[in-house]
Amino acid sequence: MARPTEIASLTGEQPFAEAGAEVLEARAADLLSHRDRILDVNDIEGVHATRVASRRLRAALEVFAVCFPRRPYKRLLKQVNELADALGERRDRDVAIGALLQFAAAIPEADRAGVDSLAERLRTEQRRANDDLAPFVQPERLDGLHAAASALAEQAREQNR
Image (spheres, rainbow, N blue to C red):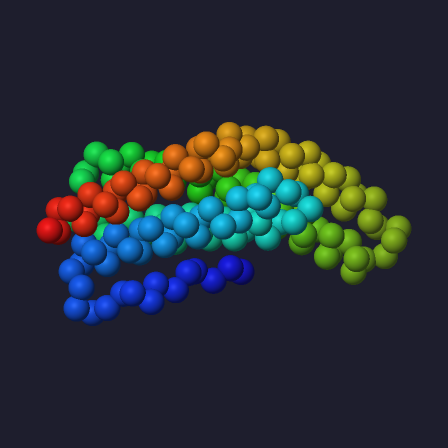
């Protein structure tokens, strides 16, 4: 699993809003770091890492909520939640397929037909979930989410001044 970006500039002396701005920017950048691998069903770690990054971003938003103007905060949180839901739908299929393949490898060849049939059905669901995810991870949408996070961070800094 991808580790979150370390934020070396965080200190215990800085104002809470400044810390919130820095954490928000770092977590938004982490979300983008796997963008080229998200829709690759042959490399399921891309969607997993992005899902984890979306959860970290959501947590940062929630922890530092008091630092951000309400409307832009709610808008960004909604976008992050929608993305996380779409990522979760795809990830659920990835995990189920992996478990079935592991199970199939451990059973006699004669018993694998049913497991293979179920795995194929899950691959169809995986492709459908991937199609549903695609609009959420288009470059312009992810860039917009990143820009919204950066703007929110800047607003937190301005309110702190």
